Picture 1 (cartoon, rainbow, N blue to C red):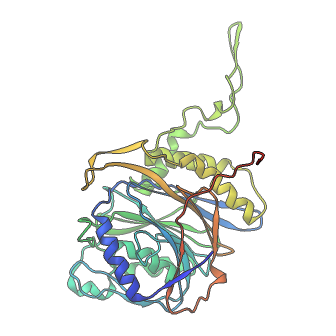
Picture 2: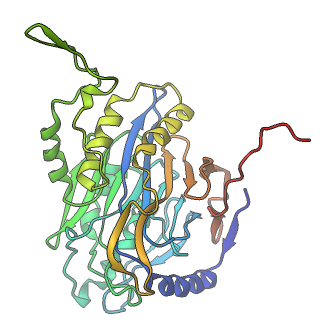
Picture 3: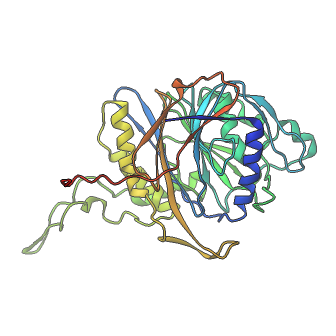
Amino acid sequence: MDSTPLTRVGWSRCLVGALTLFLALSPAEACTGIRLKAADGTFVHARTLEFATNLKSDVIVVPRGFARVGTTPDGKPGMKWNAKYASVGANGVGLPYIFDGVNEKGLAAGLFYFPTSAGYNAYASTDAPNTMAPWQLGSWILENFASVDELKSNINKVVVPAVVFEAWGIAPEVHYAVQDASGQSVVIEYVGGKLQWHDNPLGVITNSPTFDWHMTNLRNYLNFSVTNAPPVKLGTVTLAPFGQGSGMLGMPGDFTPPSRFVRAVAFTQSAFPVKTNDEVVLQAFHILNNFDIPQGSTREQGTDSHGNEMTDYTQWTSAKDLKAKRFYFRTFHDSQIRMVDLTKFNLDAKEIATVSMQGEEPISNLSPQK
């Protein structure tokens, strides 16, 4: 798998293209994140990425020392930092920022859509030296911290206001899932102008409403069981379940965030234990098969700026091995699982390396050839 370095000039050109593409973007996005653990101690965090317009994501590898400047609402230079740790993950629309990835210390971070619930920090021009845009926070986390505890001690130093993409017309509404190699997991949200973080003992995340609402909603499903319901005798009649799955009868099956959250908890908590990192990665992809959204099944009211109907669909699914520092992915056009190993790159390179996620899956013909 080839990787291509991009200079800072190259990234600037990509940003222009990204902003142009954002003109056509729909605000719809539905993502599901899960966490699993293997017997060898490997934690894997996996997720789906849904959007209505092709984000044209690629895998990028950000080296140590890479210089960053935060974006502010008034155009002043924001927070400046140099990457302490190298990281690997998927970007979107050519941006030099990771939307979902893992760093060399096994800390993973991902952005998840958070519509109608996100309420970012207030901003004053004097805040500029500590400010960055919502889409930059994930990379800042990956490039500066080795553990969830370390992040908790520093996240209050950052101002994250509603920075608007001028071409997009809105500030992206997101919240963040972060987990480290020890298994600690946290959800970071900006609500009502204030930072909120929630410990995430189950390792599951979707979208709105707020994370604490989803955890409370689980109490509506305490009757679920992985064991099939037993036969019931009514007078002289004995009624038995029709088939498998009766213990989970009533599980919500739609694509809304509350329903996906419930299903993700049910499937991760009922998963059989596996031994190795390879097994747990495959297990994560199997579970996320249940959250794959085909094109056409979820549609926005109206059309985009080009008059096209907007339909959310799963563009890619990823898994991060927090022990081996590997980023696995498959895409809408290629269901073969591919892997990028952070440790195989020059982590002190001068520029970001890019690994393409594009391409279509060939269909193997196993019939006799004449």
